[in-house]
Length: 100
Length: 424
Image (cartoon, rainbow over all chains, first blue to last red; front, side, top):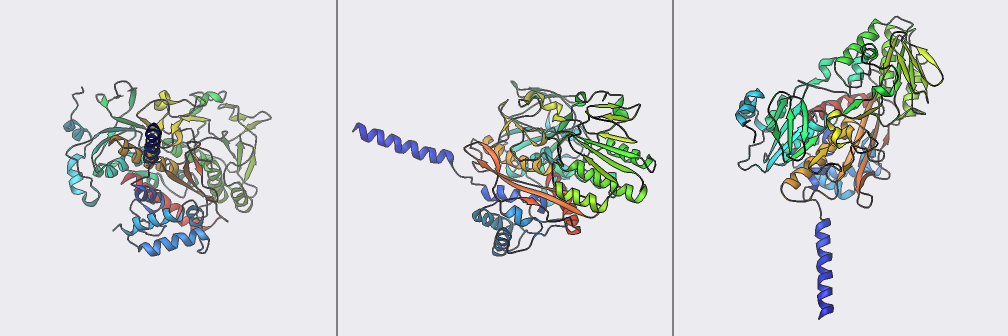
């Protein structure tokens, strides 16, 4: 009985710590905001860098992954893409694809 | 309770509702039930970005007052091109007007005090304002006292021009007025200072101007650091190819004293005479952040999950004023990234939620080594929960393979896009 109580408390504490550590519900938005310095707030670059707003998610994700893997030539994007996981690059691609 | 009302603000801020109504897509609706008020002090790369993003990401539910003493934004990045003669002050000067379309209350005023207990900011022109959270983005101020003879009087002749504005114009005039065959001396303080590659870009720009206009003149860099602190091989390659015989670089050459009458600077080894002396002093967090300076008597330590000061709850510090994380530069780009991290955290905290446990920021600095050719340095930083600090992602980042004109196009594109990202 007492053991069960301790176990239950432990389990509860574990699950609470998972909740406390948590995940970021705005992760895609927040990651995409790190691109906005060079590509403008919604991905509609004014000049220089390519416009990325509203392009297909698949095309954006594969482009970013090719930069990361070094298959696509770049001046800077290969170095920046390497700082993001594939999952993060997909979230970013989906975010900008959804911008008008 | 202050008697200051929203109506007063609309009068003061000149624009108010009418411009918001006309602005169309960029507007953020006024929430019927605001969750609180944020005051942002300083409308540079950090503060202006924070103000806009808090309005956007709270969908108008957080009131934002942005306090700035200058009438317009003048960019430090690109200002070296004004010294080179390739860009004008008009190119680097931008209005705060569009921020009002996001519902940011832009107030031209100067902060005279911060009351942490009562959560109030005192201002020179208008009544005190209360806040729920405070964002302080003050940039740097200068430690002239660290250099002997760098008095208020000497500062009329010897400029740092390390804040873009009137000193940018005056330094350009000094360079234009210099005789052919003269020496321009640029002194660089020990790192950390604002914009690590900035001095070397400036030397390149001045050399480019001399090469066309006064080819017998020299640029002498006296660097307190042992070597070029950023993009060293790329800068040196540009100097050796483009400005051979014009730029001379000396490392471990800290300027310890200046004499504005004799027009000399002193290092531990030499007294050097120059025609134009451009002495950049060591720096610290800007004056308004003094209550939050708690690292080396110069910088503000912060919690990297929220940019919240470790010296005061409810106060978030951005940009150059912070005690930088490892390998994190004091740059405009980084201040903009700090601002977004803080904006996201502030919106969560003011809604009773926790900030993101996985913040990420990046940095890109483009430097113009001539009118058209550019080099970059880039990095990506993520949060390490064990050491509670942002760290460079292994394998990310790097520098240009070589200087190029295509990066000149990107360098100018960076400026246009970050100005749009921060100002509307």
